[in-house]
Amino acid sequence: MAAVYLAVRAVLGREIATATSVLVCFLPTSYTLSMVYTGGIFIASAGFCLYFLVRKKWELAGLAALLAGTTRSTAVVLIACCFFEGVRVALRDWSARPLTAPLIAPLGLLGVMAPGWARIGEPLAFVKAQEA
Image (tube, rainbow, N blue to C red):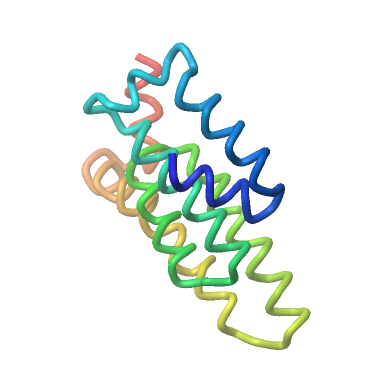
């Protein structure tokens, strides 16, 4: 929950960050965060990705989104956040460094998609397997 706290505190302040962290910790389904599921890793990665984007630590934001992409396909939202924020800051500051986040971010999801594409010919094979 440290990642959630840091991300919310960077944007909305200490009180709201504390309340958000407490709410996430005591949600009825929060017990699954301590189990061997990918939810805890995804929430931590998403929180750190957003925190690093706010702090303009582009490489770390991209790495956090990469890790999130290896756990859930919904990391495409983090990839979009990296893309839009990186491009926005790159155009504003005339710097190429912010573009490292959107270049690194999709690699995790692409790494998950590659085996299905190679074996079955369908990059979204994991989605079709979940539908069945």
